[in-house]
Length: 167
Image (tube, rainbow, N blue to C red; front, side, top):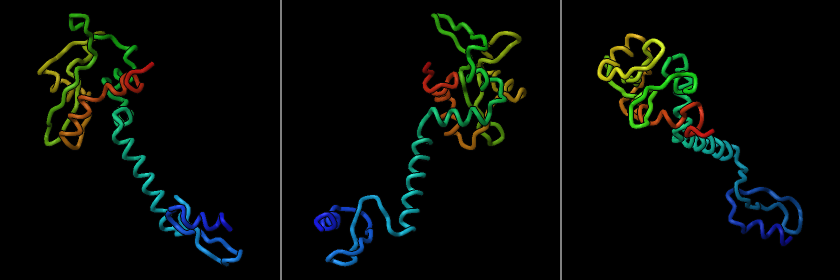
C-alpha cells in the first residue's frame, strides 16, 4: 500500500487508476502519463512541433532541404559536390566556387552565385552575375528577402553535403 500512496504524491501530471486494495479504486499520478487521450495527443503534437522547430533552426538541415529541392541547379551541384568542380583562385591563398549573393526580380527574391562556370573553369562575374544567373536559370527563388539573405550567408553549413563541411 505504501507504493500506491507514494505514487499519489509524486508530482505527476495525470491520474492513472489503480484498482483494489484497502483504499479501493484510487487515482495515482505519474509523470508524463496522460489518462485523457486528448492530453496524450496534445503532448505528442507538442513534441513533434518542438522537433520541427529545432530542425527549422538548424542551419545544416535548412540549407540541405533547400539544396535538395534545387539539386538540378548547377551551382547547387557545385555546393553539394565541390570536389567534382574547379575553384577560382582569389589570391592570397583563397579559392572560391560561388561567392553567393541575392537580389530582387519582379517581386521575387533570388539567390545566385557571382562565381559561375565559364567553359571548363570559373569566373567571377561581379555585377553581371545576376543577369547571367537569371538567363541561365542558375538561381533559387525565396518568398522573402530575409530567407534569401539567410541562405546566401548560411549555405556553407552543408558544404559538400556534410554538416559544417565535416569529413
